[in-house]
Image (cartoon, rainbow, N blue to C red):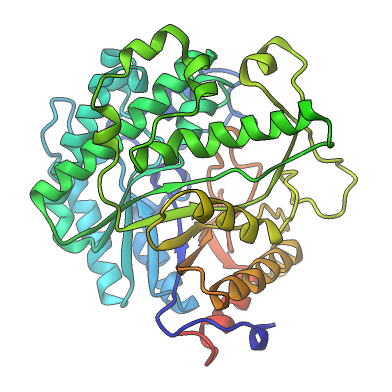
Length: 450
């Protein structure tokens, strides 16, 4: 498969993780609890009743994990910094938490791996949820800016590329509308207010970082929607459009100084009063890059239930008997990667693009020290073939980060779904590279790639 792929020599190949999903060390070094710690403690929230207190124990095993990245041939690593690890409740720096990331960055440098950091991957400090209602309070956006400035001062000289937020749609809508993510709120107008404050935090965070350091490449990571209508019926076509407006326009419009679509302004209702004049201009700070995460496509039809009516759409679940589903139940649709990127660049003046997450849930076991994750291998091969064609066509896509380096805590699914190219035995913390990891290792050593 590798001989049919062609990428420029400058193309970046990386792997990605997130702090809460892998670090553990939840009460070490002055780390504070996050809303995900609180969410995990609530009965019934997590599929297997698990938590992130230990996760992959990366806090203690980061040297082993960095060595693993290097052995597999990765020269770029996307990770998130835990706000709760580096900032005390009074807003001051936590030296022990910062030291962990300095040691991680030292290890990456020694192995020739360039860091790509994300400031917020959903693990909001619990005290901000209590004091300011989290993303429902405007003050949280300002506290994020303070956090961004602190990281810029303390670690910024080691971080060439930084994203403010990862997938703010998840924090806003899964966390405040559907309620399956922390903090577990179920209120449609609140989810839109949270979305606004998240984008305000992004803008204020970029301003704060640039005030400390002007040489960093700065951007944001989104998970855009590709939604097809279940039929040609006008109601289904309108539903698919609503799903894309929610996922795409609510976050991309503010990045480019555009107001939300009228449909979203209607849904936020009276809470629109908390959006202040000038906020959109604050959101629209210059971007050096944008990260796009892609896994699957959706199909929508006209809403039925009251909740669906409020959203304006309902998703059609894939037939579980279909052969092209990953183990989490998501359809495999490599051509969707091309479609969604072209859809976005046609509507917004995007900066250079990185594919910052792409991967599949494949729960293949380890048998005699081998994990033959054929589903994931096929998924990656098909998506990389699609990506190669996209880059060759002239789309300004400069890198690809596989999700994820390690099996890890998969949010509301707990440890029931495995997205890693490296198998983790959670009882022993043993790491076993899977067939997909060996495929990528071969790919990265190919003369057609860097």
